[in-house]
Length: 265
Ligand code: 0L1
Image (cartoon, rainbow, N blue to C red):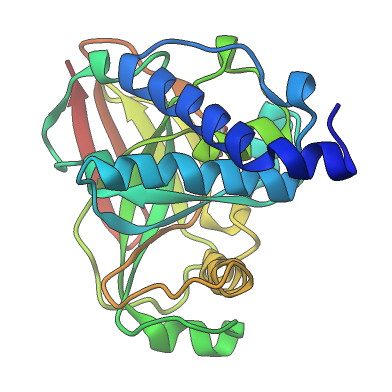
């Protein structure tokens, strides 16, 4: 494990190397072994690796489109064996057209989870309260996130999943509704070929998914980032994730918000 002066000395190059390892794994659809147990980096350093790997994507022309929160529900924390809220950065290359076919050869071992997606109406440049959050939003939509850990067998600790941009891989967003009113207990059903595979309530997301906007504002502010108007905020999963396979019609219905769907190719 590297500490103190040792870590400082090699920090920048090690961060760049680990970011490149994760970026290569995502680009080449190649699993990698866990990094944190070998290199012993902290959560703060994991976020530096995340930012460095996103910078590589930006360098290839990908544009930032927003953020995602992870482990906002007990179901997800229990499924993955971690207990802290995390966040990752989304780019336009991760957006898949709602209703379209999503080629699974873009991923290593993709899973899907039902979510809500918020669209911001104003720049968020400071921590917001729950009362303020709705005033910064243009709408909310039913959505699904395709997660694809770059780690072998989807096994990681908190530092590794953060460095890996919280397994971000794909986002499918339905139609935005301008009414972000009461989202605290809407029914959520995700189906594969019409068969329910995950059911829950939006209340599973931090008790009220609007709290994800509050958390995103706090995390962005602490990281010195402003979320521009027009940013997407993926609120985190309402249920555990389900593995994807070719030839599935995947849909999510959220009470009062409608449906988002895609087909796997
Ligand atoms: O919604 C979520 O909680 C996403 C977590 C992403 C990390 C993972 O489960 O691979």
